[in-house]
Structures are given as structure tokens and as C-alpha cells.
Figure 1 (cartoon, helix red, strand yellow):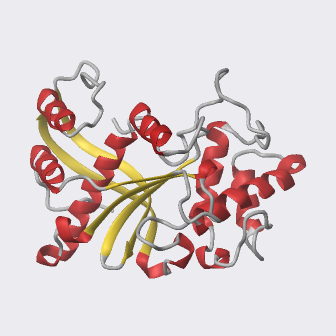
Figure 2 (tube, rainbow, N blue to C red; figure 1 turned 30 degrees about the horizontal axis):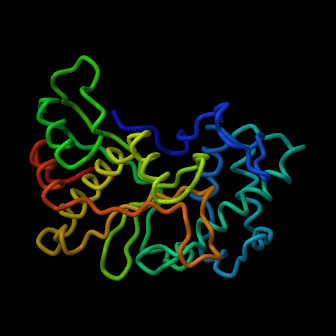
Length: 272
């Protein structure tokens, strides 16, 4: 079972969570997470190229922010505050420099695709064999099973927030709205492990890998053409910094991806 995606990744704030000076509890939890994902999905990326931290949303971009908030039940009396906060999060997310040297707002429409829903069939897979492979590569080390099932089979389904291509390489990107105690590498690694986002990222990688192999055939090679995964923890991003916190970048080893592909049945493609 994949960890939640599409915004359902922000638990309500716990009692031990520090309260930042600018934290607004009205815009927290899963409902706001879904709204933020929708705002990013429907944003005109190019319109944010000249946005600066602290600025309002660019012309015409306040409308999709308002629509995303209203769709999740945010009332008119909090809408202005919600738009102001969401503009900051969207602006930082689209304007932050990624490790490969590009900003999302600079990626052309034809080089990215949002909200890719995928599904692929699993051949009967022994859970012990799957866990042995995952643990050998440091993934979900605390997990000892998948419920009471000894075998996994059926359809693997999921939704990838964004895929894009830059400098000849393909990337999987996921937006996370989680509120964390910190957004440095150590806190991000802890969040990735705690939420089992590392397993989620691996499944997303395999889904895109299968789709690329199906579409491109011999013109595609994972080791050469796959850039990796990017998890953006939106509340920690700083578009004004050349070394922004809040970015978890990772690339799974080719031997892991190929072994998981074979374990699941080496299907020829993933529907998207």
C-alpha cells in the first residue's frame, strides 16, 4: 500500500510540534494540503518567474489559489489570508533552485506533466522477498510485513504530482505540505522514513521507468536518463537561497530498480 499522496500527507499538528511565529493553524492539516496541491497543479508556472519572496501572487494567479481553497471548504472570510499564505508557498516552490540547476517555473509546458495516474499489474510477489530487497537498500527498514498478507498481487496504483525532463534526464517530483520541526537534511531524512515516502518514491520511480521503457524502447536507459526523485517540503523552501532547505533529492541505484521491476513481473509499461 502506497503512503498517501495528493496532499493527504500533513497530519494535524501534534502537541510537541514547535509553533513558528508565522504559523496559522487555520491553514494546516490534510484539507489545506489538498488545496495547496491543487493550487500547484493549476498554477501557470511561467507566470511565477519574476515573483519574489513576500510579494503577492502574480497577475491572474490569485484566482487558481482562491479556487483551490474554496474547493476544500475555506470560507470567504479567511480567503484573503489563505491566498496570501498560499502565494508564498507556491512562489517558493516554483521559484526555488533544484539540485540540477533549474527552477520549476523555468521548465516549459511540454517538458513536464502534472498529476500522472499510473497502474501496473503485479505478479504474485512474496512479501519476504520484497522486504529483503528493500531492506538491503535501506528502505522501510522498520517494516516487517504488509498486514497479514504473505503475497502481494493485483494492481499497483498511484498518482505522481509532477514529472519533468531537464538536460536530457527525467525526474519525479512530489510536493509535501508537512509541517516539520526543521527542514535540514536530517529532518527530511527522518520525515521520508517515518512517512515511508522512500517506498512511495521508489514505486513512483518504477512507474515512470516502465512508462519510459514502453514509450522509448532502446532509446531509454535508466542509468543514463533517469535523474532521480525530488521531494519538496513546501513549508521549508526558500526561493531566495541558493542552498534552500526543504529539498530531498535522491536517485535509486539501477540495480534496485531493475531488481524490483523483475520481482514485480517486469511488465512492459505502466498506464498513465
